[in-house]
Length: 284
Image (spheres, helix red, strand yellow):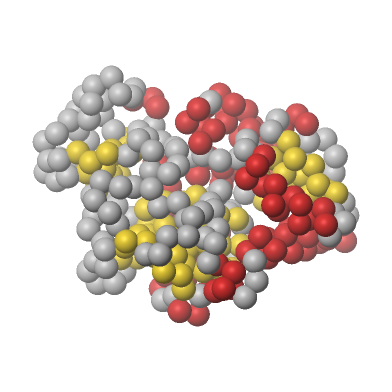
């Protein structure tokens, strides 16, 4: 049984691939779905950045994921997860359907406004590292010519985090690995946690509020996401307000100390377990 990893950025998955291969697992890394022919566990690690650069290619990948699912193949972070990950509007809809709090969100209007009477965040449909996000003050229109109506840009209610932080929950399967809390900086929207900043605080699952963990697990089930992260802010009543779902996130370097093991090692073990389960059931 093989583990087949689909990715647009191979260097991102190299540490995971090396670890899997060191354990005797046959791994194929592909950037084109047509290259994936052999049987095995398919792991989708295509970033939302791809949808920003090449929407047509992202759509083809979505079609391949759906086809594999219809054929009964086992796919981690399949078509629903992938499409939700690269659409801020789809994420807002999913959060609402899950019954969790999320900012008011509407399709953005080129040269105009969708939300009136307050400041908002103008966000591209997909991306990463906070790219393209900007604040629009009350009455300030979205720049004309920056995007078209069919591109999926959104206006989102600008909230004030009660604790001044953004919280990211990293998940693996149905389990929460840890939470990372980062202070919000004015006009800064990049909360990538791949680098060890001194002002990032990590918490183990047992230290996270049950109402947060319950909401996160509800979101994971709805999005069919097994790998990735969910982000939220805290309101004045200490309730989580969910703002982002990221199927391809980065582990914080300090996570090993919190988990007691390397999160990449934990991911490898999870994928091997999933792969072995397919073999026992005789699935593709």
